[in-house]
Length: 265
Image 1 (cartoon, rainbow, N blue to C red):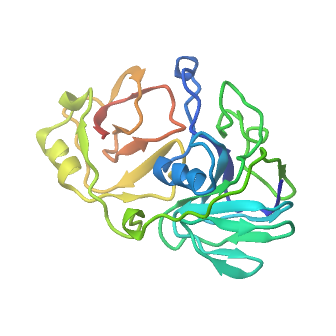
Image 2 (image 1 turned 90 degrees about the vertical axis):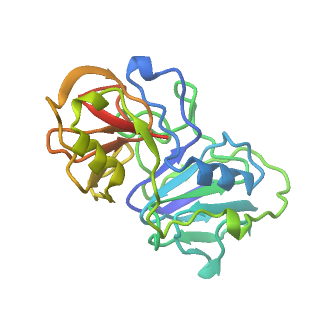
């Protein structure tokens, strides 16, 4: 079991997400950074589908109540065990009474804590993932808070593992994001699409697990920005009337009425 002593601003339970529910308006949820999430599980000998913690901007502080192993991946949040520094992207052995803390992210936004055995929370619609807006899954459909206790599935001995430095994503740079034209690309001017594909955009603080709001060159419409609502894929780039894009993420709505200029590959 792990006992939450300080939850941080938004720490949730996630697995790889729920499938087949978008037709009912329930998004897949799951990790925003799937690569880091899967590696956090593999480093502690879990299946890729095991439930783990997703920590946003500032990580939690929690107590381990039994011997086992954890791994921290994703954004560069400093990790300590009983006040002593521990490395990310590798297996960390822990024992009963150990207190683990993740500090503020130095680079990146979301970190993942895999725990040997995986987090034992109820399945809801086939998944343990937390969907915050719908209050579904995880622990009562909410972010964790002080005093929460999370049970673990049994696990055997964990072989120490690590991720080679060359395989760890660089969260410090300005990545080039690749995209293909979206279903309403004809609703934008040529200059607007050129701005989207050639411009530099920054992620705004108003972003969340539903979507990342960006600020940068205005993406001009050739005609209206509203459409009859249609389906939204992961990575869809909606452009409302102000010309500033929104990238839809794992907690996205199932349909939307803004034009979609492109979809991130």
